[in-house]
Image 1 (cartoon, rainbow over the protein chains, first blue to last red):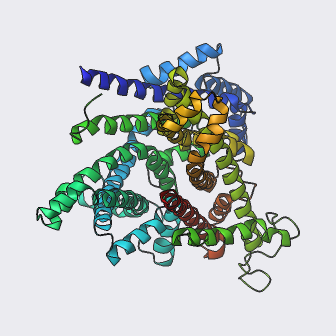
Image 2 (cartoon, one colour):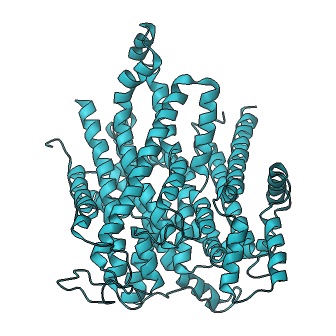
Length: 332
Length: 274
C-alpha cells in the first residue's frame, strides 16, 4: 500500500516538473519583445544573400506552424503539448532539411548520455572515497591537502575549467585534439580508440569539478558520523579502524550522497551542455548550439524540451531507487 | 576580526582585490573600454598597456576591469532579489501552512529540478545576443529564488515548533512582528551565505551563456570577453592575456566567493556555539 502511494507521489511530481518545463518553453517565445518568426527570417535572409519573395512567404508559414502560432492561445498550447507528449514529433530540421529533428536527437543522445554517465560515476566514486578518507582521518596532513585542493577546484564552473584544459593541453602542450574528429566506424578498435581519445578532455573537466564537490560533502558527512556514539562503541569493542570506516561510517555517509546526486543532475547536465559546445563534442549541447547558429527553431525547441524531460526522468529514477539502497527509508 | 577563520580571511582578501579592480579602478579610465580601435591592435604587455591590447584594439586591462564590474553588478542584483523573494516566500510557506505551503513547495521543487540553462539558451537565441543585462538578471532571478525558499521553509517549520515562538503567539504579537523580531535573527546568517552563493551562481550562469554568445554581446562582462577572444582565435594566435585574464579572473572570483561563503558559515556556527 505504502509503495503505491510513494510511486504515485513520485510520478505526480515528475509529471508536474515536465508540465512546468514544457509550459515555460512554450511561453518564453511569446513574451519576447520581438516577433521570433520575423527575427528568424531576418537571420536566415541575412545569411543567404537573396531569397525569392515566395520562398519567404512559405518560410513564414512553416515557421508560424512550427512555432505553433496558429489559432487561439489555448489551441496553440494544446497543440504544442500534444506534439511533445503524444507524437514527440518536432518536425523537420530547418537547417538540414528534410532530416527530422528526432533523428538528429537520437544520433546525439548516446554521446551526451555516455559522457554524463561515465564522468558522473567516476567523479562520484573518486570523490566519495577521497572524502571518506579525508573525513575519517581528518587530522592527517594529506586529508587536509585533499580538502584544500577540492575547495580550490569545485567552485570553478565546468566551462572555465574546460577552457583552462584546452589552453594547457591542446595549445601549450598539444597532447589532445582541438575539436573532436573520429576515425573508423562501428565497433572497430580504431573507432573506439578515437572516441576515448576525443572524450578524455571534456570528461576530465567534468570529473575534476564533480570530484571536488563530492569530496567536500562526503568529508563533512563522514567527519560528523565518525563522532557518533556507535562508532565510539565499535572502537571500544576493538574493531579495526579499517572495519569501522568501511562498515560503520561509509554506508551511513554514502546514502545522503545519493540524494545529493538526484538534486545535482540538473546542474551537471547544464555543465555538460557548455562543455560539449566548447569541445565540439557531438552531443545534445552541440546540437542545441548548431540550432542556434543556423536559426533552426524546430531543432532548438526539440532539443531543449527533450533535455528538460530527460533531466526530470533521471531525477525521478534516482529518487525512486533511493529506498532500495537505504534500508532505513521506507516508501512513504 | 579575531574570530575570523582562515577561509574567511583569504576569501575576503581575494574578493576585496576584485571589488577594488571592478569598482574603483575603472574610475581612473577616461573613455569607454569596450570601444573598438581605440589603440593599436595586438600590442604586447608594456608600460602603457600592462595586459597588452586585444585584436579589436581595446586595452585588455581596462576591459577586464569593466567586465569584472558588470559581472559583479549582475551577480549582486540577482543575488539580492532572489534571496529576498526566496526568504519571504519560504517564511510565508513555513508559517502559513496549508494550501499556500503546498503550492510554494511544489513550485520550488519543480524549479530546482528543471535545468535552467536550456531555457536561458532558448531565450538568448531568440534575443540573438542582444538581451539587455537587466533582462538576463530578471530571468536569473526567476531561476534562483526556489533554493533559498526551500531551505528557509524548512527552517521556518522547525522554528515554529519552538517554545519562544509559541510564547510570542500566545502573548498576542502579530505575525509580521514575530517574523521580524523572533525569526529573522535565525534566518539572517543563512541568508547571507545564500546571498554570496547566488552571486556565484548568477555570475556563472551569465558567463556560461555569454561564452557561447547568448548574453549581451555588446556589453563587457567576463563571459562576453571570453566570447570575443574565442571569436578572434585568441588561443590560436597565443594572445594569452586576452583569453586568459577573464578565465583566471572568473576562477579566482569563484574561489573567493566560495571561501567567503563556507568561511562565514563556520564563523557563524562558532558564534552560535558560544
